[in-house]
View 1 (cartoon, rainbow, N blue to C red):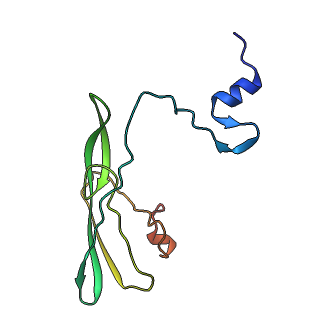
View 2: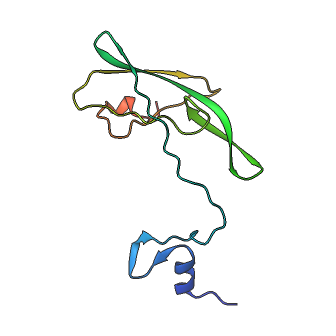
Length: 121
């Protein structure tokens, strides 16, 4: 069977009428993984700042039944906690790297210096 350009574009998940928005290519998949929101980490008050202790660690998780996948997480085996902050609050983040390799964290939504925001050192 010859694959046309239109069929190729459709098969990789783009609708020709709106080429910038991906189509749900895997909508008919038989995998049913619910979206799990990481638990809220409330931190602790210490010397007038809200302090968060974070630990990077290796783990594993079954995304598909019977198949363990190596993972990396923060305070758990996969992903990291949800952290909710108030604008203008003093916050201290303590990060302990328990991995066997150098690592960084990207702070989504926080205004921090570029050298502290998950880029290469």
